[in-house]
Image 1: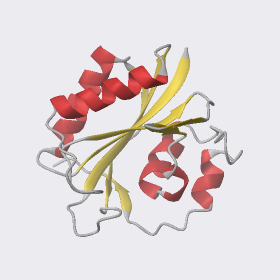
Image 2: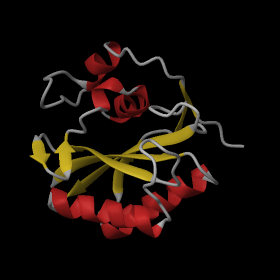
Image 3: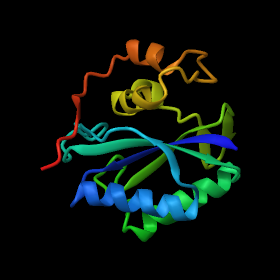
Image 4: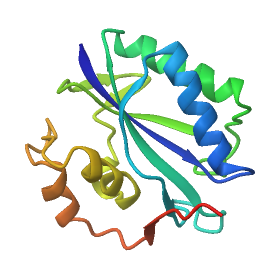
Length: 162
């Protein structure tokens, strides 16, 4: 079984509900989460005039090939109503593969570890919560070390449910 880390994000509509629905679909179609981070509220990244995001990291254990996982997360996004119209635009749900074990994958439609994760506080903060000692296979630094080197100044805070 391989440890697979996914990042969920939502900044439209009932964000908490969309994260929960994504987790339910991932549980059925890929594998149940072994570990979940808290939910974090984050300023929009890349396109800063968008609504704030809710982000959460999940860890799954799966034997499913990475391309099959990618196909399933893309299908879940579509099933939930995701539209890819504007780069970094608002979305009901976004599911990124952060890590697939310690594999380094460079394919036309997939790069793992996620090529931007070491630059993003909204990814490293929830990752550090559930797996601070995980070593990034490219940079050979653990998540806490990468987090300490962040230059990202986005506000990322634990989400308070209303």
